Length: 264
Image (cartoon, rainbow, N blue to C red; front, side, top):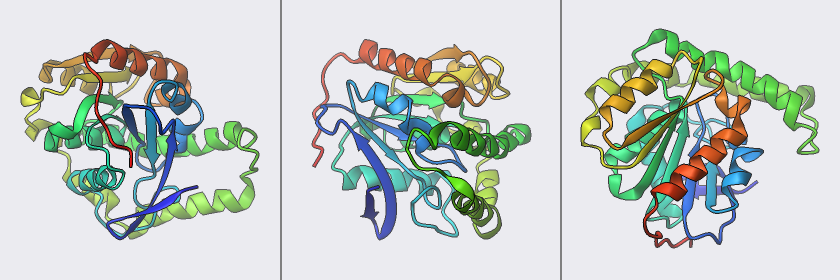
């Protein structure tokens, strides 16, 4: 369980296939952790790529902080992590609010992002879409307990359940996370999406309330393509293999030349 210090912050990361030439960085959504990728999606991508996953601040095993959950801060956290790992350019994928972090980073530092994958990013100004994130966190925890405790040979049990619930309570009650998310409600409408040149894959569930956002993004980002996956907002849980294979195919088809990277 590697914990590294980035700009005086403790960050939990996991890496697979560190020797690969190209890197995919995976960003989870709010109120979950990197395990949403670790068990199914990351191993498939790691057949061809160096895969980096990390817990956002106050999530999983990363250090807790009372503020800094706006997209500018979260993007800066990500760029600092890339600097720490000596990764000059990566393929960047984000799910739910993590998709917004990925999109923000591609707009802010396009020279650091070779390809962008946005999975089920919501429109922050859609109040109904924002509630999906809260609902998802509960389903994620239930799914994790039911499916991954045996896989990891660690029985979550009452103590771990209580620890996760304390994390949710901390985020909801003692941080600026909800206020920061609400302040970002005009992010998509104000972003200069038409100017973005990064090749972008948009992955959305056929039955997701966020699908209209994916369809709209596809009209705004000239370098994007939209792929619909069977399921709703929880497609990383519902169809992890299809998502991983779709991402791998997108990267293999899009790459015209190898990336030069230093993994430190």
